[in-house]
Each structure stands twice: as C-alpha cells, then as structure tokens.
Length: 436
Picture 1 (spheres, rainbow, N blue to C red):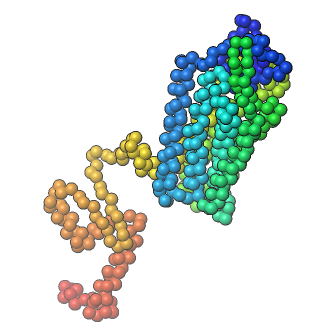
Picture 2 (cartoon, rainbow, N blue to C red; picture 1 turned 30 degrees about the vertical axis):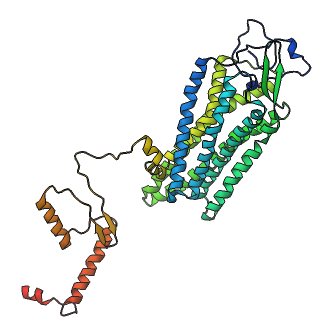
Picture 3 (cartoon, one colour; picture 1 turned 135 degrees about the vertical axis):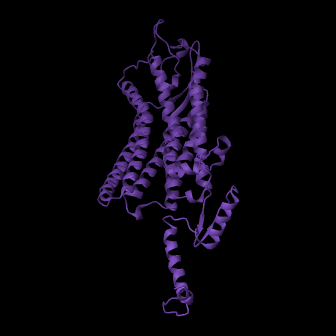
C-alpha cells in the first residue's frame, strides 16, 4: 500500500499499519463520511503477531529492568563506588530504567491497535515522555564521554566532582524534556468519521514537525556519535603516547591498559551505531519521499524491519547499557557478585581445584599476622608447625609487601641483641665466647 491519503484499487495489497504511525495526511475540505475507509479495517493485529512481538519485547524489557536495578543497587549500596564517574553511570541507568518502565505499554498499545486508543492525554504525553527520555539519555551519554576524556586526557582541574555531577545530571533532565516540548505542543488528538469506520489518530503539525524531526535526529544520533568519536579518539591518542613512553621504559602495564580501554570504547561505539543508525536511516528515507511529495511504497518486510528498528532504538539500547558500562568495568564485575538481587536469582561460586586443598587467607596487620585455622589431619605436623610459629621460624610468608618488613625486623632484632650484650660495643657476648 502507499502512505498518505490515496484511494486504492480493490486488488491492492493491504498491510496492517496504524494510521498515525505514518502520519496520514487528509485534506480538510473532503467530507470523509461520504467515503469508505481507504484501507483494510482490522481494529487489532492478529493474536499470532501479538505473541511474536511480546515474545521479542518482554525479554528485552525484563533483562533491561533487572540490569539497571542491579547497577543502581551496587552503586548506592557500596560507598566506595559513589564516585563522580559511577554516579554518572547511575544517572544513565536511572534514565534507562524509567524508559523501560513507562514506554513499552504505550508502544504496544499504539502498535497493536489500528486506531489511536490512548486518547488526547496520551497523544500529548506519549511523544513527550519518549522523546524526553531519549534526549536525556543522549545528553547523559555525552557527559559520561566527557568524564572519560577528563580522566585520561585533560588536567585534573577539568575532572568532574560530585557537585558538578549533580549539576550536570539536573541539566540533562531539564534540557532533555525541554527539547521534547514540541511533541506535546504540536501533536493533537483527532477523530474522523468514515462511512464504515470511526478513526482516531494522533496528528502532527505538518509545517513544524518535519523540521523538528531533523533536529531530533541530530540530537539523538549525530550529536552523541560525534561527541563519542572526538572524545574516544583523543583518549586513544593519549594512550598511544603513553604506550610509546612505556615501551621505552619497558613498562607493559600501560600497554595492557590501552588495549583494555580500546576494547571498551569499541564496544560502546559499535553498540550505539548498530542500534541507532538503522532506524535513523529509515526515518530519513521516509521523510525525504514525503517532503518531495512522493508516495512511499510499504511492504510487509518494511513494516517488520521498521518495528524491529524502533524496538532496538528505544528499548534494546536501554537494556544493554548495564552490560556495556557495567560488565566492561572490572570494579563493577566484582561488585555484581555481591548484589543481593542477583544472589536471589543466581549463585556465584569461586572455581577451586578439587586436588588442591583449601588455603585460608593470611591477614597482615603491621608486624603481626592472623593465621587461619587448618584441618587437624596430622597431629605431629600441626605440633611442629605450632612450635615453629612460637619460635618465630616461619612467621612471615614472603611476598612483595612483608618481605621488606621482615628485613627491617631482622635488623631490629640484631640491634636489640647487640644492645643487650654485656660489651655494648658490638663485641661478642659471653655465651658466644664460651662456645668458641
């Protein structure tokens, strides 16, 4: 079929497309009650299509809600994670969580029914809420990119503090929903009577909204994509400079850090491109034909691709953000294992070699050590170990930390022994003289 108002022949192929989805345009002068509805009347899509779409959408939404809730839990339950960088990620997780809670019901009601069933209030709020959350998410993503740039490239004065994070977070929400106001102003609920059908739809101002959609595409796609390309390119250039300096000093740690950061940035950038670009291209192609006065050919394949692209654009990216910004961070990966919510769903167990006995952890506090309990397998061996500990023969386990302490203690014990000697001037004691 063709979008826009055009009477079709009886043998024309019809597909189930909600009228407001493609912004049907209708001349005001025509009395529609004299004509039959120029498309198939289906009221609601078949149950088979509903099941397929719910099967695809529900797992994405549930996975995203769980991931964002767990991410917020581990950030606010661990004081060590309440840094400026992690609070920015928490803001992004909060935006994604609100998106996954509010938008899917409106999206499904709009998609399942032929007429618009949300009424005049829904017509004003649907686009305003979806657009506001999407723009806010994009602005928060840009702030996260700047924070990573400041942490690696810029001087320490340019880094965001907790106060700056609070201000930036408030501005993201304020500017995001302010930019989405045209959805509430220039969209209106309309009813239209045909001879065989009562149509309800949410109409957009055809003079203002096409220009506004160009701005939305810039805000939602090209602005964050440009910011990420610039910031991540600067980060990689800075790390490349560090790498050359580290190779000259034979220091492989920076080289490993660069490869890890490069992988993370590649995942962030590619996920954004894969999720956002297809729907953007389809919008640009569609509006180009509509603005040129051409009719847009629609097939069943196009409708399904359009649906999948919009689901990915709105919901899939909100669902994978916890994976991108959480699981690619080593600190978050460790914190996920301590999550109370995840512990109720799955259990994390450390892998141990069955042939290797369990070894307790040794805690070192200054010059003293806490020894773990060991199984009483051999009383003789345990007695020997106990005597050795009392005599101080195996007091320390050598490692990079307490090896220096051991040397200092040795020197200190030698100094004490010399001071306790009868001579006091470094000569041998009377016992040693008697042995000689």
